[in-house]
Length: 265
Image 1 (spheres, helix red, strand yellow):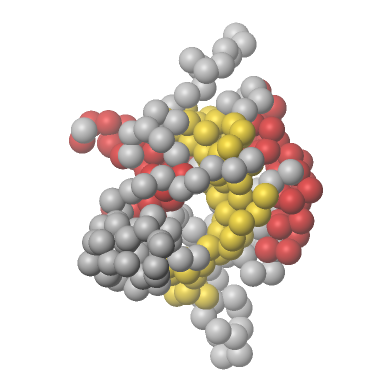
Image 2 (spheres, helix red, strand yellow):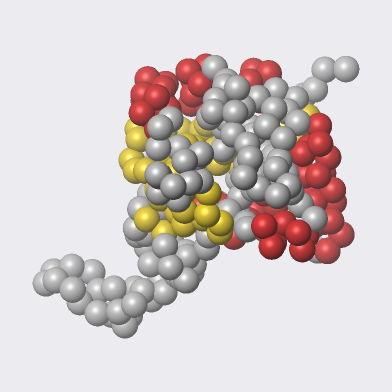
């Protein structure tokens, strides 16, 4: 039986290929894209005591097509966030630019764990996630209550400028330190919650990006949902979600996680 949009799609994560799902989504149907596509590096935490299996699809995707479909399904005057890596950034940047996106920043957000890239004695430890921040059209950031300004409300920094507000209205491109959420969970969190994934994202971090870049009721799209962190972040902030996950194992973990969230409400 054919599915009908939006009733058969909203608040669903489909088990299958992201690009196949995107073909079914109408033009400009989602309000925000927040996703971590595979980088084509066949990542495996081989130095861990309990290494994860290589992620399904991590041999690479058709990133050019993915970028085009992302631009097509995103509503005009909306934001998009694409996790990337230092060595993949140039190619991802060019694909997203060619698709039509206006690329505004590369966010660098501290991870909850340290990661290596093979040479443990001759390379720096990877302690941050890179995220390409794009706009389709132009959308101003939302006013949020996520983080208070360090200066007292009403402080005048320069003549003829608006006095400072209580909460930050513009965030830096690098999020480090105790006032910012980490981009990923560490192994201790994964053991405590029995949710295992090699690149699991922190719901708090995702919820900050969602609140900055969308409105309650908006649809947040994540085509590489993993264990459903983006979907949980969307629900906790009053948004809706739509996504795909190609791995049956991780999709099942995500479904269990979403069901648990609904039970705890």
